[in-house]
Length: 211
Image (tube, rainbow, N blue to C red; front, side, top):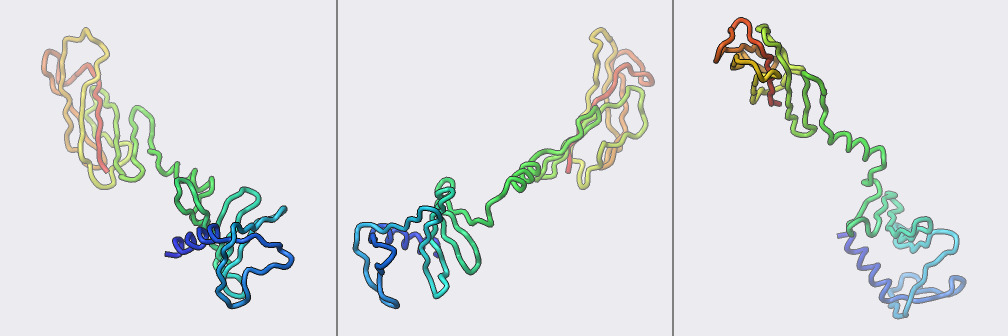
């Protein structure tokens, strides 16, 4: 693994290193494999990044300690890819895989439910596509009613209830849904106690789930 290989180099450079003046000393002769067995190796610059260059003639890779933010990273000089060491929770972060603020905001918006908050409204889950809809049907309305938005695929479940704000009413009705499909439905009320099937006294509420 390239990352593990770089870590091995870094650990070795820390363990076996040398302090030397920049104006004259050399670590090793060209094209040799000399061992470094000194106490410390300092790569420090007072005004810019500290860089250790490795690779072929042009230096394929840089080990860099950034002066501006004190972050340590490996830079591929051929692809311009940057790997920071370490990132949050000890994981590696490739620079082009990091999200900027605009990208993060866009992803957060993408995780929110879309909705219409109204008497006849709906809400939709961002990833599953589950849609929940609700609404009100007037007590004498026997016409076909349409959902605020049609279900693209399936109307999976539906529920109805009467809405009665007057606790003194002696009439009792049962709401019913007929001919329901992905786009709408018809509702009727049936008298249970007292009252009239033709003139119910309470409105109806409904809720549906689908996708």
